[in-house]
Image 1 (cartoon, rainbow, N blue to C red):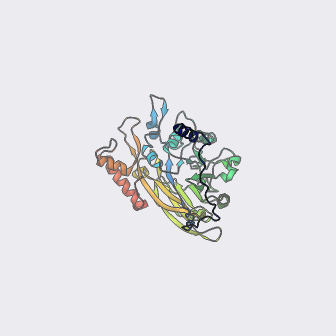
Image 2: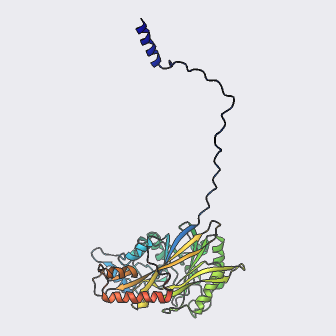
Image 3: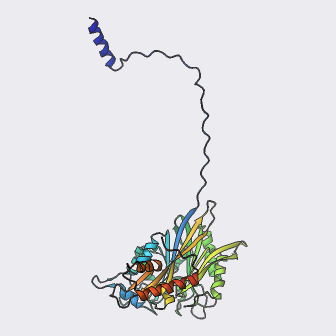
Length: 413
């Protein structure tokens, strides 16, 4: 009987709700005293500055030899990808990249070089694929293929996914933001404007004046009378957009001169005084220096602006050493936690437009990173550079250092 009672008791303990009652604990009138003090609240971390990289290239031109080497006969199309290969490697590190498109994309089919350019549509797609974001389209060749060519160029850029600034299809398009393109450059907002000195003697009808941003009133004659009212109004509109920085891309200067003239330096001072933080020049087809200038601004305050007078050609068919030597400029932009933004670093990577006249079509024209091309040759691994080309690269590098200084020449990462 004692054994049967023990078994029944064990079964009762296993059934839900059947656990034996716990011994009652005496109630506590107060919680026990804390043995340690509560941790001190940690201060909020200091906000970090925003840092971005804007890369800038020079004049993209479709001379006849450039277009010929892009032709892929087996596929019946053009491909500029091999020319852009080295640049694409660097542009992959850019937050935003801009260039000057110095050829209309008017549709051919008989594409033209100098003096009346007309390039294949594939150029726009290949430039986008290489890593470019914005085409500056106001230059002396904007109207080479008439107004239809100017308008069609913008349609092709839109289709390729490239933003554009400087030329317009209507007055309404020009009036929107005064023709200003606002871009997000790695979290830093930049307002881009673009102007040219003239149109190689072509004159716009009065009802087509909106089509090209021209900074000279006498743009088809003496080219010596800047339209300060237009520039001041556009830069006032840019300031009103309240972007972090303002950049003016401008086509100016004397072709094949490696130093800026007084017209350029005076205009640069005016642009910076009116709010430009960056002035990025083209047209001379050769390198000219860059510098940071200080002027009295529109508001009576001292302000600084970075001015690159000319980055030379980007891709072209021109054959002099100086016209084949160029750089991709890498500008470090920084916005401080208080909102102040500026150019905080400048570096450049030297490039050289290599022409291999004896090679097969599709293997003749290459824009090469000078440092990488020289290193490949020295390592015995280059398929492009021979003794003669290596000597040209050495001279091109010396030329870069002479015009821009060697201290900012840092190979691309």
